[in-house]
Length: 159
Image 1 (tube, one colour):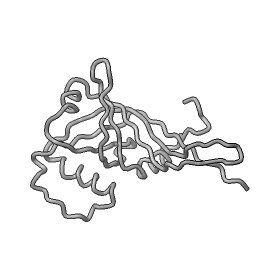
Image 2 (cartoon, helix red, strand yellow):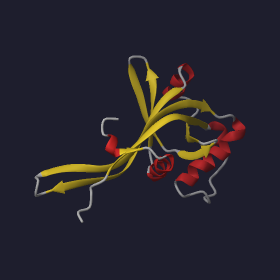
Image 3 (spheres, one colour):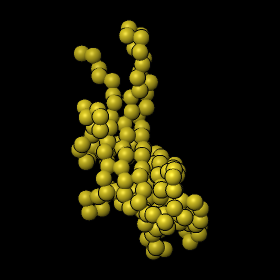
Image 4 (cartoon, rainbow, N blue to C red):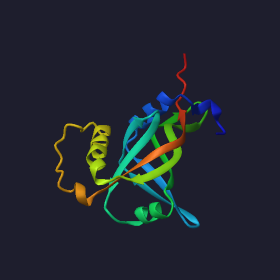
């Protein structure tokens, strides 16, 4: 990371950034180019590792790519705010972000409902009684994070 002064190294701080994000972009290998898809997600810490959960239709390009190579990159960001400095006549952007990579696994039927509950919890809707009838025709998958880094740019408050 070029700007090590902005790096978030503490695991718990990285988790806090993830908790603030509402979209995770997954990048899959697709020959010469990457295939990136934005997804809603849920997060859980399992055996000291970050595990991200996703859902979608039962077929499509991402599943073809996962079948060919289940390694994926991810990115998420939040806390965006444009900061204008009239005195210096410049601007910058505040943000927090997490990027990383991991292994994707399609979940078996018996694990889907729990994973969907983790997704609902991420959006503070864990008590919503959603219709469970579509679960058998929904793919649910997880990405177990092998490595990740966090980055934060927040304007320093003048004392």
